[in-house]
Image 1 (cartoon, rainbow over the protein chains, first blue to last red):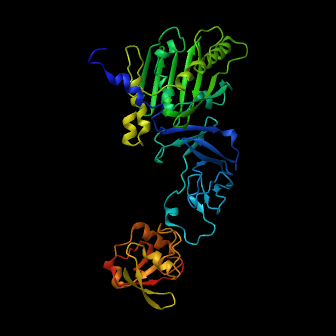
Image 2 (cartoon, helix red, strand yellow; image 1 turned 90 degrees about the vertical axis):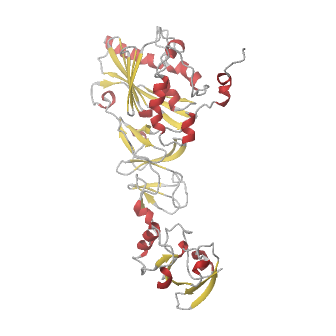
Image 3 (cartoon, chains in turn green, brown; image 1 turned 30 degrees about the vertical axis):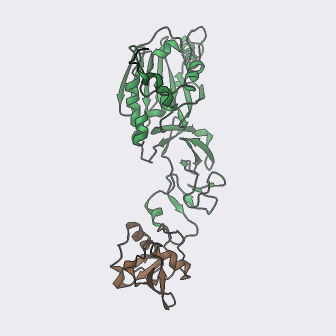
Length: 339
Length: 107
């Protein structure tokens, strides 16, 4: 090597991290609605910490920090749903789903802050698509966008499909999502016949992707929801993808696959099922591989390069990163500098 | 040490030596004046309520919003006067030598 070697590119990997990102802000899938009955509660791990997930008697879901603001008891161990409140086992302080303390059964004088604001951290929740969703913001800010209407999963008739799956990857949500714009990997990692053209548009928390001139048309609603419509063989099949940041370095990808409710035995139904097979793994008689068989080996072992060496033919990786950065607005300057 | 004149709930008066860097609540609590100071200075219990003498009340730094809110919260249970303070918020600096307080009734 000559005198003017670029040491930065040779040595940069020594300082790389696998997941330098905080948990991004957004709406995230918590669980399917039918897994939590009124007055039930359980402990779950999401967004890098434990939460108490509960449903009130009237059916409202709540998700709270486990530790009682009073003396720190874990409300998910021995606590109870009482009517519309979560009750701490230790001294029976009670909280509503918004985190307001509604009862201190023995105090004569209510501490002023109890009347002024919620004292227990809870996450805003909505139920949609037969699922519970929670809004995560590192500094407890209110939601800044809404979950969209998705006909394939919300319309009472016209669509069907019960296939769904769940896969856990040892990486963060941004690294998983980046594959959506990295079209070159589709040819080389997945074995697609070519590198499909891609166009992406960005508007606020929404990113729209068109891969292969209408073959896959996808919309991301923040970091936690993607609706991808695959158009092939004259039909459209839909993948609804809702990935959860379990911790900063572990994500669970969840997907529901839906298609038009075609009659049994029709070529359209056959085609719809085949397209869905192809989304997950290699469909029968096809060369290329779905994400299940090939993406994990990369995700589970790679490091994040904040200054990647991209070439002509790569997808809009940097535009994607710039768009995604908005979901880290609650992060400190030192963290932002690394990503 | 700062001399603080204290009028007890039974009307008796004593002068105590208060450490300058310790909130007055702690000295009153530890010296057995019936001050509980349950919340430790977080202004969430109202059990360290005192009446400061008129002459001294104006010399102390004014109460914060949180202190005012706590004083208001106890007003349903005890008499709160314009010179009412939470003694956890009073640091008996030497400039307050001779400070006069009266222990308020329990809420």
